[in-house]
Amino acid sequence: MRYHAVTLQYPGERGRTTVHYTEHLASNGLEIMLPIVCLPPTISIKIPMPAGQPELRIKWTPDPDGTAVLNFYSGPAEEDMITTCVLLPHGRQETRALAETIQVFLPRLDFGLSDLPDGPTLLAIPWPNVKHLDAMTVVRDVALCLAGAFFLNRRHDQN
Image 1 (tube, rainbow, N blue to C red):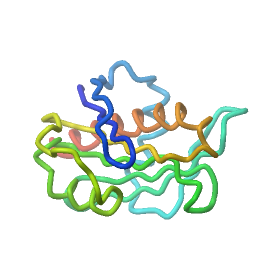
Image 2: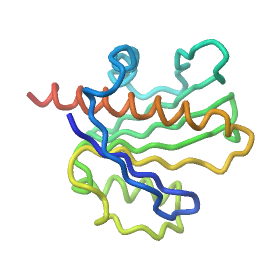
Image 3: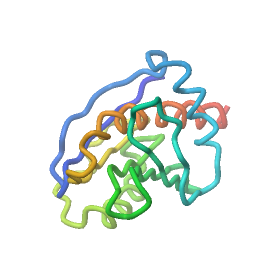
């Protein structure tokens, strides 16, 4: 399954858009992430990480409209937030849900929602958190696996 990842740089400039395929993700990554995307909203989930990697937690908030928000943390406090991701199974067709989320996280956003791709899209907003720069690459990889598992699960639920 093909999906897009769009990065917005704080305070709201558009980064890059990449295309990903669930078939190219590590199968064990999808297996680990699938139980997470089936959970109800949660305050904090510890992501299993290899030895030597930073602690990684997420707050998982699926919405009844089919979208979801993920907040990645590398510690217990708000200031430990690394990245916010919005998962949009139908891409720009879900701009209302996206617009509401963006207004909360990036109120000065200068990004046209019509620029989003059609189809499943992961919108990632990395936070300018120097304290956790070492976790950014890991968060990106985990977010891609979570998005792939989420989109596959949504497709399966609709069939």
